[in-house]
Length: 164
Image (cartoon, rainbow, N blue to C red; front, side, top):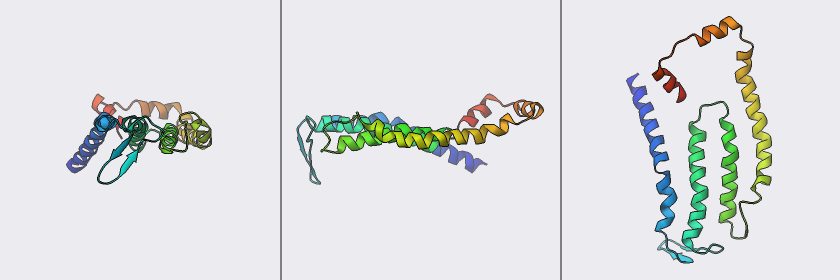
């Protein structure tokens, strides 16, 4: 029991840390040069369409950080509707791809047309899951439902249920 609590605490602490560092990850672009070309010993980056390297990475980070946070949310979410998180996640992935792609001189405009097929798949899937989860509750007799609801939980138990 104690080992399981320790593992739970470690996992929660790691997730909290990953969320906590997200602003620092976003503002990494501030440390980059304000020139159109960035030379390092590993590579040379040319900002291309963007005004300078800092603007390019500001654009990339404005897509990467939401992808990062939505991925954490998707992986850790235990609600029945968590598949819906894929819709904004895929939208940001398309936006990041278009921002990185030098051939496209516009982005954040047409992603909705690429996301519609994903929405068409995810919405019925989420509705199907909802029906599977709540249909047994709807068919439950009033005595069974009352018995289920009469179980008293402490505030701490209710709080722990949020993270199961």
